[in-house]
Length: 247
Ligand code: GDD
Ligand code: MN
Image (cartoon, rainbow, N blue to C red; front, side, top):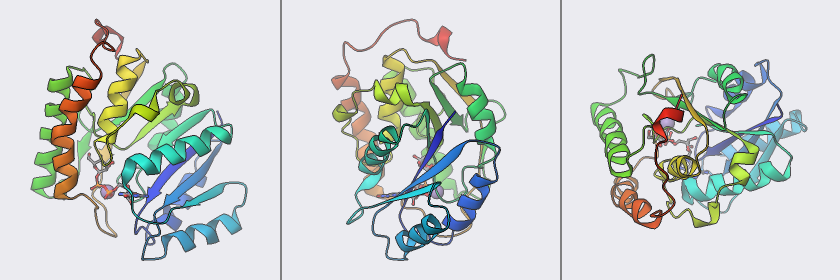
């Protein structure tokens, strides 16, 4: 399956070259699309240099300024679809998401529409080194979103996912309002409402070794109120009896 791995980057210069090597070492037909927001640490330049070395396998979108995950991913999705991808991957640049899991995700995607890399199913975990406030926020945020939206997906906020290109094509992405990390919740919920076949595979979320997280208090606030807005805006889209379909 022709796969494009979309990697949003902001100050990931120390991580990107190694991540690209790890991805290219996988036994998969994949290329990489970096969406960089004019990172002050020169990530965009490094991405260009990598693209010069592998012109067929790396593409780079340069944006003027930091503009959050929604617009980074929406731009990435649009470009990847134009490039005729059959599968799209969402992945962080900082090795919190082990590239090796993509092999299992690709296998799983053969019989579903969306594979979610999940920290909160049996076999999944988060790094002990992740600060306690992040562990707590992530666990709480997931329960909060799952409860309010009433969905059986265990990890609604994970940033590691693999989609069939047609599934992304079929989503009303223009309606997605969430700007920051809660974008992950909103599109997972949309996929659920559309009755897509969703399977969670366990992942180990390693804390980043290099660089800094971009999580902020504003991102958490947006997540807290946005979940309610997602619920209100999607009234009528909901269908019943989905739990049985979730693998
Ligand atoms: N282009 C762009 N623009 N990239 C961004 C931006 C932005 O505004 N904000 C963050 N990124 C990139 C980072 O460079 C990284 O590759 C990825 O998005 C995730 O950002 P991190 O800052 O590493 O996120 P985190 O580790 O704190 O949060 C993780 O957990 C969240 C909650 O579970 C991620 O997996 C999130 O995706 C997840 O929602
Ligand atoms: Mn991270």
